[in-house]
Length: 393
Image 1 (spheres, rainbow, N blue to C red):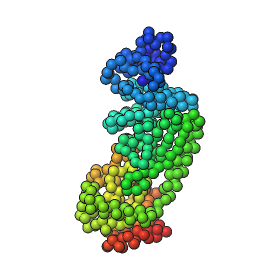
Image 2: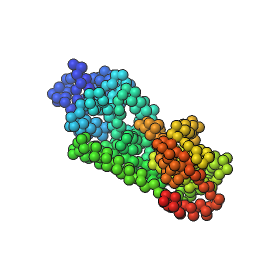
Image 3: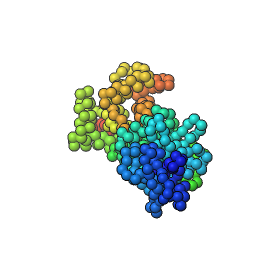
């Protein structure tokens, strides 16, 4: 911890303790009130630590050098912008201490958490929900262990965040180089779960928060460009079809479940319509095999008669039913609302409008214009995949 109480019950920063009084003064944990001592060595910045093993929940022992330096680095950056900040602030109604509490204005505060070590999913969810129920927005930043590469781990998913401007974003702090990275528009690029994303680098000694809006705008523009790339490539469709066949051959449990489901409805992996293979943004949020949930949604939409009207309420009811039936399962992502995780389904509906299966009659209302084609053999299907561009003309 960087903050402790002195004998006068005043909060004092470890770096502010004068050397001549270090051995004489007494310090106490602001949370459990047990004695702590000052550590001021060469490997870590000055900080306080409990003398013995403790049950103190607010301050875990063994804070890494990265965590201590990162908290201070972020604090200095926020203070430099003129924000009122409190390091390791005690929130008594939550019994929680965010690494930094940043007051955006007189009524709004953001809890900033810098996560450098593994954290139980339940604990992360409890902390996040705690902040939200008391009106605090929470901003999680990850450290070096969790820097994004070519895959997203289950732990990294816990910290993915979205708002009206940036989608599926992960925030990473490079403490040694004093750089802040925003990974945005994170999504699968193929069926091997390799990911793609946009990255913006912020140098903390250069960029002020007043300029962050330009960073957000850049990310939003990149996302807009990506959304416009909706026409699938023939090789992507063929690869997706091969993926299903391989899963069937190797008796992949998820594939077996999918195959059983479609067989019960008179279909097979050969007959599946091309629309089941279309990629949509946000599949990263959904655990269920993409072909599976698209098949269910497409069947529900097109079992109606031509000219039928479907509205948003009916669509949401169907999505909720799929969640209850567990025919669609979301990943655990505490920073995202259920509305955010449903967005891939709405993107899929937009795609069906593009290929003339649906027609948008007015906002959030669609008419069934045509039914999808179910293939009779493999050759016919591959030939259709190779001419996929004709659907988007």
